[in-house]
Length: 506
Image (cartoon, helix red, strand yellow):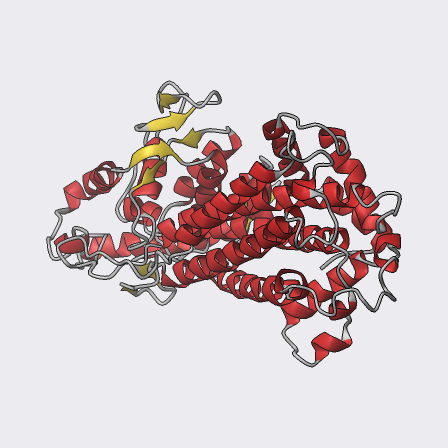
């Protein structure tokens, strides 16, 4: 059970609800904060003061006064008009993350909504009712207006729900019990960065795992190509004190110890004096990505502590318009992290290409097949990795520099944070596939070094991959092998097994 307090939630809470189906409850302090906030809005209503979103229209219509008897109608009309997305539905985990984050923001008591509104969102989560949220619609301007409006529409008993089989059904058919909105509440339901923040938080968790797995696959590739572990000695990284670099180098050094393959050429003075950059500079690239991830983590943590709404209800009774809904901090972080993840994949593909090239692989057979010619080995697997690298480079072009004005030039600069975080998720998914190709290639290279045996990590990886790929031999249908190895990269089992033997990896 995840308890949403007036202080918010943690990233782990979000993962538990979005991906783990944890149930949600509202703490008493959150209920109290919402009641206090709502009493201020009710006082404004009684006094007849003109306040944006309470007694006026929205956006370019902010100067249009709304009569008291039409203010509830205004809130419902707002939700209907703003639920204007189009395209395929967003994944269930993204929508659940959005809903939880909107609950979190309302529960902080600066939005002027009744506790019943947040409780209704909690009810949707706990009933496993997922609104159908189209992929296109948000500019990250006043937050994620259209996606959040599609969620809010279900709350009032309208709109679409994502059924368990992926079909689209009406909120009525899904058994939703609608609520009626009061003044300010429709605006409070849609004016937030919850979609982009939810995607960024999940991407951060995914990137943290994949960056560690990138060190694993790099170490195995270096071992398979008879590389050196000397560039990863800690004293070489204290003189360039980037923390991510030091962490990655420590991982590589640890993973390459106790390897008869490495020992076989350690004192060979005719061996290459220096490894190629894709081997020797692995911690510099992966480490820079880790530092970028730390920056994104810091930004997301700040946003998770933030109250993102407009207008906000202050504890002294004022209701003030803000620009806190603008998604620039999240868009920048997502774009930067996408660049870093794309480069982690790019350098991994270079190692794959080197392992497959008989001129550069230090005596491994062409394309890692013992019978090249009749058999093509992993030739086309490298093509696949190269194609994905090219796509990631296109996706690494920043979305956050591509503002387009909207709402009659009222919203004349937008963040594109929704687009930035969406494509970040794609880049990370692609990175997982590239690392799968590297893992399969490295394991095949280690197998071909027999009778020499690899490091402890290499032996564990060989056992895991051999379940799906077998050993060197005639060509096989590779697509299902790559899918299985990809699941090995994305899941926790291989990393856990390695860490049990060599210690925790950063």
